[in-house]
Image 1 (tube, rainbow over the protein chains, first blue to last red):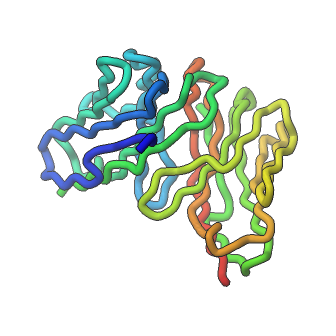
Image 2: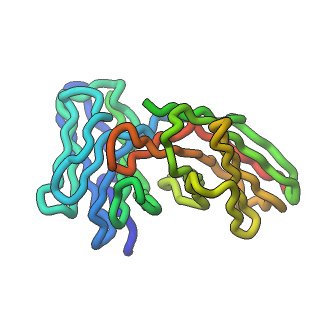
Image 3: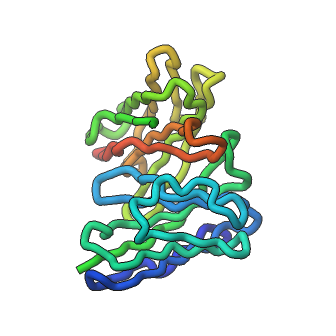
Length: 116
Length: 115
């Protein structure tokens, strides 16, 4: 399909383990965002990529969270030493250009992370 | 930083009635206000947006109004249908973080349209 693809759709892990979540944005979209959505809440901004660089990582909660986008397309969100409080749906979104004149953000269906 | 408050948290209407969801924002420099619809197990999907140089925008049964002075914006859905049942989120741009297009979301409104 032509939409934003996220894998895995569900991930169950144990406290202390390392997790990687993958996002494949819409082809040609230079802007990529990661959001986190806890149950019953709105999406919470984590990080924004413009091309290969992280233009704004102010939403990452601590240094256990890291994201990369090495070729300006696919992005991976990495979480080290997972904690139960990391359990949430991690949403990826892309847009054509990003920035203050951004148009629509296209969201994936999310990766549901459960930390036991 | 920007803060967005959304009300009500739940809304139940009869099919054919109108539904109104309201949001307030804190950063007067915000200039972009989208509304997203999220169905169960799906990602949010944009339904309408408005920029700060416009007071109202309409798209078929959906309209959004913006009051910059009061820092309020609202979503209006007329002639509601059962398929409108979903969670709706308002959002505001966060210009304080620079030219990133970062959005701050409200807490969401669960809309139920009863047939």
